[in-house]
Amino acid sequence: MKRSPLYVFCKSVAQAFFRIFMPYRIYNIENMPKTGRVIVCCNHLTFKDPILLTAVVGKRQINFMAKAELFKNPLLGMIFRNVGAFAVHRGKGDSTALNRAQELLQQEQVVGLFIEGTRSKDGAFLQPKSGAVMLAFQNNASILPVCITGHKGIIPRLFHRVDVVCGPLITPEQLQIEKGSGTEYRQASRLVMNKIMELRDPALVPKALKGESSE
Image 1 (cartoon, one colour):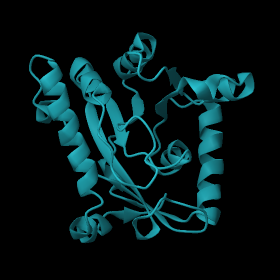
Image 2: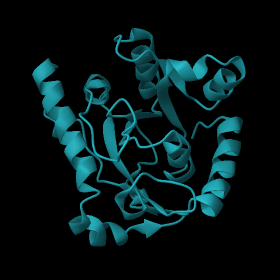
Image 3: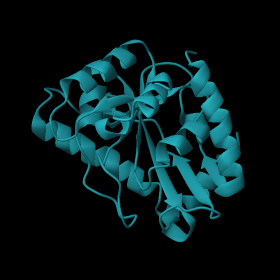
């Protein structure tokens, strides 16, 4: 299992922080494979989401694709790179970021993407982007759908519980992409987004609770 020393340290600090200031419950963590190419796809609510996922979603290092603006500060940029994050220029078809994601997946590592591409201001789900399913198809990688939900369905905030639910792994075959066309990518993206949305459906909460764990 490849993890940078700084990632391990930050994970421990993040776990302590969330236990105190934003108590979390993680469900179905066993759905995260211990090996193999995996793309973690999650909804996006706050700037703390990557830190939260780092803290609670398994022991493997999640290498997040993050907006390039976060890397402008030299010190922060160095820290982000040392915990596996890599920059993407949104809305520009950033080939450098895609190449880095492909390189990580080819090395049997985990890549983290927020499928909506930006944060939701009110907690509602946004339209999904196609980058995650394209990477999954091109690299024969599975997708782990994850949903973050704040207390009573609102945006997660300090001193309120936050739930993180991992869904069943989505295999490349389940994406039903054969030619890599734009239409196939859009359909597959909606499939992944629907799986994430289902994890917030109250009707599925009892099933999710069966897999409750704390790391």
